[in-house]
Amino acid sequence: MKKKTRKIRWTDLALLPFAICVLFLIALGKLCGLTYKQISVVFNLWIQGAVLVLSALAPSAAAVWQIAHGGSLLWVAALIPLLAYAALAVYGFVKMLKHYHLPFDHAFDLCVMDLQVLAHRWHSTYQMVNIIIFVVFYLLLIGLNLALANYIFHF
Image 1 (cartoon, one colour):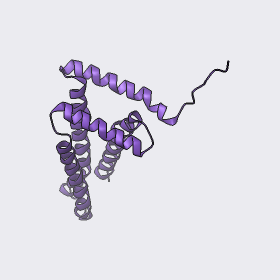
Image 2 (cartoon, rainbow, N blue to C red; image 1 turned 180 degrees about the horizontal axis):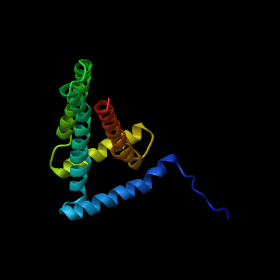
Image 3 (cartoon, one colour; image 1 turned 45 degrees about the vertical axis):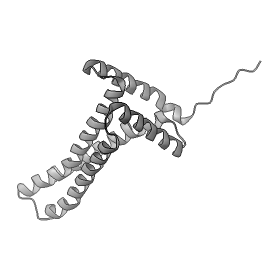
Image 4 (cartoon, rainbow, N blue to C red; image 1 turned 30 degrees about the horizontal axis):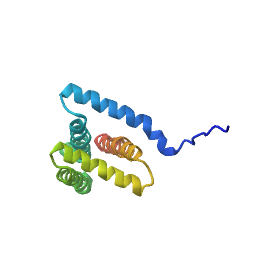
């Protein structure tokens, strides 16, 4: 009898990181007295979103610091697109909060549904899309925001 072997797909790479994230959220939820759905909304949407917005404000703050400390007038011109970027981040955060409004069950279920739709469109899995958005994309954006702020601050 021939043994069936399962091919590993690229989307399977997200299963372990996704499981680790779920365990992290469950533990954090237990510490805070929140259910998995509640901590998922609080951490993934509210906290991560707020941190992302703060990191988007960092380049503008660095440019203001340059201006305040005798930097050239070019920093005033650079501040305009940086403030527009920061405003876009705040706008996106507010839109996200309105879209995933309370109660917690509604926000969680809607987020899961949206991630499943994206997974279908991207020919991927819910877990992979979740990792791409809430880990990879999130860390990449924060890293780029902070690197830009650091560059401006030390220019």
